[in-house]
Length: 456
Image (tube, rainbow, N blue to C red; front, side, top):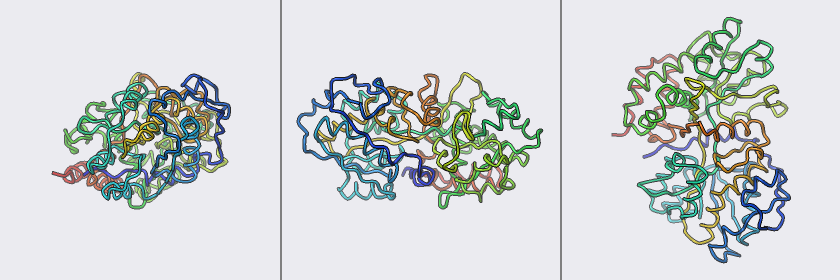
């Protein structure tokens, strides 16, 4: 009934983003400030406040099982980030990463053999798991942490029929444009702060005999998904968050004027022969270019910009200097004006299938600012929307940029739309029709066909 998560198609992009060799050595737990981000970036000297977990009683020797799609090497920082909790409580966290997580977690839940906790990468799958009757509502401590550190928008994504099931874990930012700082500096280009400025910059690049944009949407069975992100970004910018929410939940039709305008706005960039596909071919080459390769022409100087999420950093060669003054960096995809800060993104949610004290205690830890800061200190390619995250702990420049965007008090965050739509739409018709659109199908036929796919 709900869309399948996009995480399988992201896995290749994520490979290599985490520093698998980083290990957290923790001093004995003490009575220090629970916001471990205030103690500096030296994780080996960190100590956390164990008091929040004493209320769950003596859980020494107990085990909590985790099931997730996060596999080697990204699993290492996760596992290491649990050590403070394990040392505080004496409990053991048993971690299991599985590339087949999205299908197997449902199979296990329906069979009555779920893990204690699953990291669920999209709201649609949260709803499916709740529908099995095996997921349990989050404890009061987790609800309070979510209110304090994330807010109502994030909390709503894991709330089903008025019951709250899980706090957010990690997050990514999709509203980014990758570019070459050196190329911009040499050409005298300024990073745009409005959509009008972005369009004017693209036109200036064309006048300078350059191709402004490059893109790739090929991704096996999931071919087309990058176009859904483009459309969602423009839907959010042109029509606002309230209309975006109605569109996602089908309170307004997919072939309505708002949706049509958003896709046409994408077409002004990606179906413009003067704008694309720098270093790769014509407009139709977007469909045959893999999403992993879509932004690489920036390094060759044959393309100036590539709209893709924060996790795209993993696709550049290892020797690439990704920094504000490096070979590659990214800027925020602007809104209609400089004051508005719409942000499209995604993330995971911590969903439990058991309410034993040790499970509740670990859920509480994962929803805290304490864990967010411990995780940030030992990770690269990871960020959280947790408001208690000390941004100084984000050492990777792209992580720092994503964190700044997510934690901007003026930001209006919305979760990936197709990840919330029914599977027949978000993980099928939307992808396929968007691919047909980029290879020549007109906008009206595209949105009409997607509308027809919506379950009655």
